[in-house]
Each structure stands twice: as structure tokens, then as C-alpha cells.
Length: 244
Image 1 (cartoon, rainbow, N blue to C red):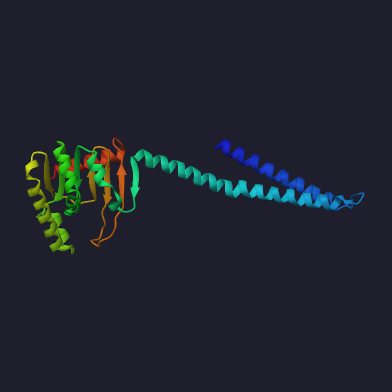
Image 2 (cartoon, rainbow, N blue to C red; image 1 turned 180 degrees about the vertical axis):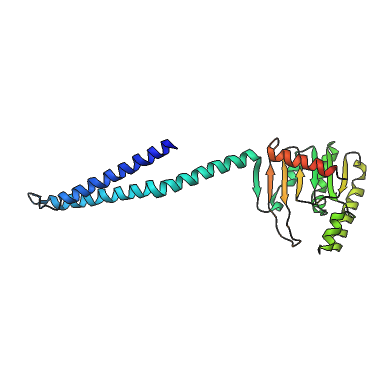
């Protein structure tokens, strides 16, 4: 802090000195000075005005622009470091932009958490089957269809017919993958969903949920392994599974 104050004082002193030099040249140029046909006075006034202007600009830069730039730079560096330390590796404005096909294809373990939406199972059934054929393991966690949470969502106006349709699709998915029953399981829990999750060997995809039941695009984050956010979500997954 002391060094910053000394630096600011030195910068201000230099700017004031430049301005004073320019002002001195302007004052000297007020006297009629010529050298042959050269009007030295005019040259001194012009040079002094330019130097004084440079001094003012330098002072304004040091006092206003430089501090603002420094503040923004510090905020950017510290913000980037804290985000990196948290484990966030990537941000998706729309969770539908995530390349889950590649993520599942490169993984031997898969865990998902969704409220009741079966869309993930439908969209990536082929990749899930391939993973199970490779002796992979998978767990799909949903809210129980008769859970208190689902009952509350119905009473709050969520589309009951849509819920029934999704649960039926989950049942049919289980039937189609029956030959791999020893490698995957569907787990029904009763919890209040704060987010949706897709966890692979190398990434956790944290998909935000909306507070309303209006259909809209939702953002998502990709979290790196062994980071603080990874450990938090991983622990939360275990706690949710224990609520069966």
C-alpha cells in the first residue's frame, strides 16, 4: 500500500513538473524574442502549450484512467483465479450445447440427476448402451413418481400429464436395457432438486434449474475433477442417493 502511494506521488510530481515546464515556456514566450526572421516567442508559446497539455493529460491518466485500469485488471486476475480454483472449467449459455456423446464415449462411469425429465436417456441411449457393452457402469437418479416433492410440484401447477409421460419413458428405457441390469440402475429419491447433474469420469456437468416451470434454455457449468466444486457436488450426489 505504501509503495502504491509513493508511486502515485511520483507520477503526480512528474506530471506537475511537465506542466510547469510548459507553463514556464509560455511565460517566457510572452516577451518579444526574435532570431533573424524567426519568431522565437511564438515557438516557445507553441512548445510550452504542447508540453503543458501533455502534463495535464499525463496527470489525468495517472489519477483517473490508470487507477481504473489497474482496478479492472486486479479484479479480472483475482476473479479468474478464484473461478479457476473453484473448479469451473467451462460455461455453457445453453446446456443443449454440451457434447454429451463425446463425454459418455470417453467415460466408464456415468451418474445423472434429473427431476423427472427422461430426455437425457432418450437422446443418449445409444452411447449409454455402448458404454455398458464396454463394461461401464451407470446410475440414473430421478425423483420418485409418488414422492412428496413431485406431489408438491403438481400442486404448484407443473404439468401432470408431462410427468406421467416422462416416467413411462423411464420405465421403457429400463426395459430396453434389461440385459445390462447388473451394470446400471435407476434410483428414485425424494429431494428438492437444486440443479441437474451429469457426472462422467473426467467432468461434472452442473445444469441449473429454473425456479418456475416455464420452458426455457438453461445455462450449465463443466467442473474439473478433484476441485472444491467437484467434491461438493460429488458429496451431494452421495447424500441424495442415501435419501432413497
